[in-house]
Length: 138
Image (cartoon, rainbow, N blue to C red):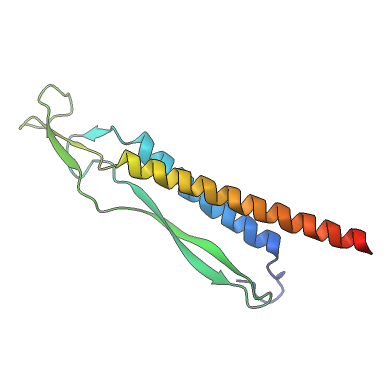
């Protein structure tokens, strides 16, 4: 939020923050996909998927509302226990724990984030073009 002595938020600031938020979302999904096949020797060591958390932020000076990333957190989903005694990471019982990543859901998440990013870029280009058209009218 803009404080005393800071510049009020503009349309381009809003779109910049929106694009940054979608990049965080895409990066989290990419990290989850990259770790989808990982196994560990215990449930505690298994990879847990990442989830970004966003919040609205209202700029009182400009009246514009935007998004901010509150954080990126690991889910508390349980790892998938599999019996694989030949795996070098297997415990005394021959079990390994796989990352609980739903690859289909992560691909959907990535595609949605990508589409939202594109929508914001298009909105910014439209606003820019309208501003240029307005300036040419004078």
